Image (cartoon, helix red, strand yellow):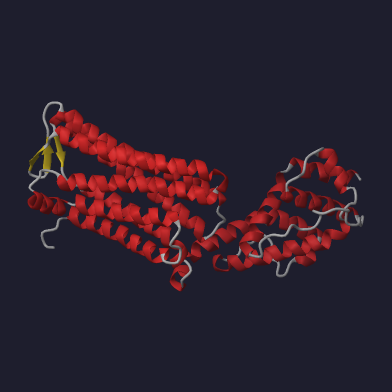
Length: 410
């Protein structure tokens, strides 16, 4: 171990993180042995960890002595990383299959196509490297004549394929983030996206070999320290994203993620302020413990958000006797032939009831469904997400503004 340099330590540390990630996924797969995405994820982590080990300078030296060949370790490491990239695309496509059942047949065809592409790229890398016929000079590969272009083509194919694979993964992760509710799952998806972004930078860094190859016909045989550092950062992001839902549920994980939860709760608390203020002005009794104009302390933001949700719901119940019976007619007149979004409908009912309350005109609940608060998942996060949509419609929807105006004119 005393002979290991900084580049070796960085490479082996990054590899250890990926291999630990593979072990965690293998343990999790025992409860879900048939999940295809898990198998691709395990294969990716194993191949990436193996590629980092094979590409470490100490490993290259040892493999060169054992095999007698000039570049078996470098080729093995690049082939393992190429396989990891292909498995990353298959993992992304498997997530699409799970999330969008109507595209299953098309996605499975894409999986077969990308699997064939990974094999083709691997064969092309082998052909390009052996056709370049590099010689070993110390820790570098040296080529002459057309070998420069062949070795440069090898580097371009290797780096470009990795970037393409990571781009596919980033696209799928972005789609998953838009659909995920705020919480540990979304945090994990953001961390995985960070791993993909760092992975793109890491892959592009390998293209720095192109200039010395084309100009001097020389390329370093192992990874340099910046490349290994990027690999370590990518591994940490990937492991954190893949395990956040596990360690986030533990006592220590809950403590680590608490500040993010508090900040998110306080942002939602403030975003609900306009809707709450309108209800509080009309029905002051909804305030359990009013704190006008003050932000809640960060540590109590989750409780303050929960209290605000209760107060808004109490205000809605208090306004139900003031719902104008003309509300369905007003909505039909403002948007004929259309079915308003549930959040817009709820906001319009609130706006009309508030105007009737200000004028002292009890209404009587309109006939038909939809004039009471919409049922949402029985969690604070679900209630907050729904009321944020209602608050946005209450403040900015054209339909709500028209209903409010008609209620005033009534």
